[in-house]
Length: 77
Image (cartoon, rainbow, N blue to C red):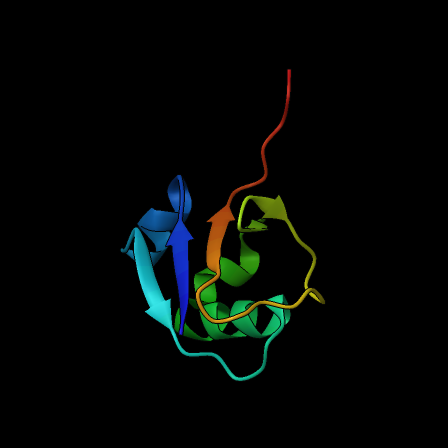
């Protein structure tokens, strides 16, 4: 089980702030596939994935107990 947390307008799309998901595989890509399957509208939303406070790419490994945070992209100024 992986804990997934949603931020900003992404919580409005999902209707939840956080949830536990069971995923097939151990890559960020697998987590995203599960999220997109559950919330198809997120496929069209630009997102940034953070695992344990580190921005990650889809091919990075996640382990049970990791905290996945899904954010809209942010800009500095």
